[in-house]
Image 1 (cartoon, rainbow, N blue to C red):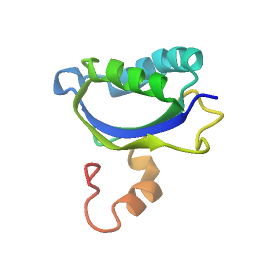
Image 2 (cartoon, rainbow, N blue to C red):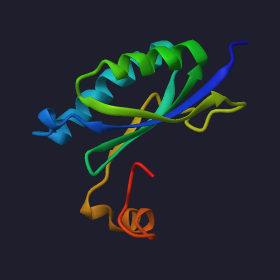
Image 3 (cartoon, rainbow, N blue to C red):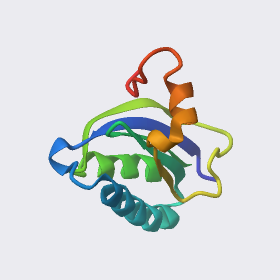
Length: 123
């Protein structure tokens, strides 16, 4: 059995590519779902305030290769790994990639995220 691995990272959306965020997220998800299914990677991508926060999990080589591919993607800028390492079970076992762009309509979520002041996705 291959070792299960999880990696959390965040990145800023490339300022040069901020014209159409919805289209950018849709393109990211479409490509990610195809790639992740083949690689056995599951996870979630959230966008808030032009920052992508992503968790991915799967075989260690697949997760690391996926992150390496993301780090070369022009849509991402200032990537930072928050945590990574082996895990016993998946958190996102049914999601090749689930994505969500948080907006003002998500006031309850944003309120919780910002309960200690302005939400800082880098904290």
